[in-house]
Length: 137
Image 1 (cartoon, helix red, strand yellow):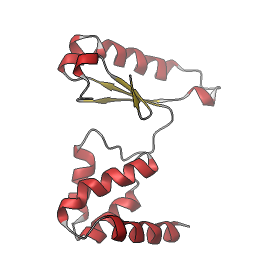
Image 2: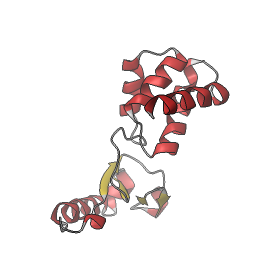
Image 3: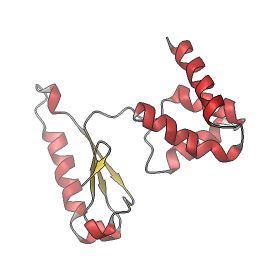
C-alpha cells in the first residue's frame, strides 16, 4: 500500500507544485492538510520531487509550529502561548490541559487527546486562542 501512496503523492505533487525550491512550504502545508501531520515517507517524496536534501525538508518541517511530524491523537488541542495569549492565561490553560491529558482514565480510549502549544495563533485580539482540530476559538 505504501508504494501506491508514494506514487499517488508523486503524481499529485507534479500537478500541484512545479519543481522549484520555493514550493517546499506550500507542498508541506498541502500534505499536512491531507494527513493531519507530516509522515516521514511524505517528507522523502517532497524532497525527491523538489530536489531538496532530506535534511532541509526535515529542518523546515520541524521549524514551523504549524507542522507536526508525529501522528496526533485526536482531538488535537493547540494552545497559543504568544505574548497576548500568555498575558491572558494561556499558560494556565496549557498546564491544565496537559494535566487533564496525563490524569485521563486509561480504560477509556476515546478520552485521549493531544495537547500542543504554538508560538502564535495570530488571533491576539481574541486571546487566549485555542485551536481544536482545525478550528480556532
